[in-house]
Image 1 (tube, helix red, strand yellow):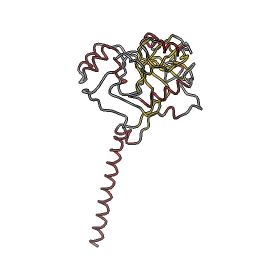
Image 2: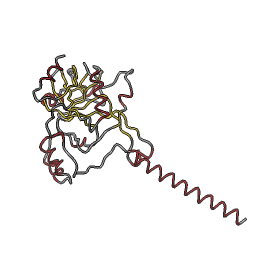
Image 3: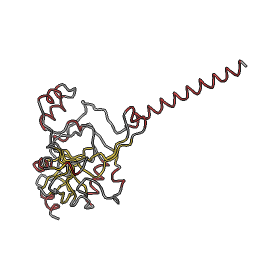
Image 4: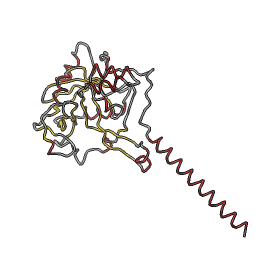
Length: 272
């Protein structure tokens, strides 16, 4: 009888230990699942968006119904998102797509075939499942071009403890800037990363987007167009998610080219 009770007790203890082990493993896996988050090393961080493009850098030339702007691409930091964007652009996907959101001077969202920001039913879903790519060298400064988050895959423990897999896709955000109030400036001045805080204070941008979306490029020409796109008159009643511009503002075309200081090669390609 004593041996039977002892055996039952042993089994119960073993089961409890195994259950705790599984729980710990699941929690650990949940944290590990957030693999597309990063740790910033201020000693090695390079704010490449503050530098001018170099000869031969890949660029995108965006022709909109308000005018043209150009941004340099960063395939070395966001290779999969840049590849997805480049292939879509070269296929003509962005031709005659909508600017479907304009956010109070801070940013705009574009690249949808539909005015309300939705995608066509037959669109390749793999194009919307590009794993988010974050890098300590890329930040949401004024003029940054980001791939908008399309899907967040969260399990039970991700919801409890944070984490999950974030994906981006075809739609783009063109960043202008928030208003840097005295309160925001004071908060940033107290930041541990003074270099980054100073860069935001000087260049502008949307700091609360930091390390939230994949940055694929930085506008170097036509910033006034980016500014206009973020300040469009909108009708928020049309869609619960986006502030849709009252007037149809379109991306007419996106051309992929290389940067030359003379601008001659890029001009030739944009005329094709």
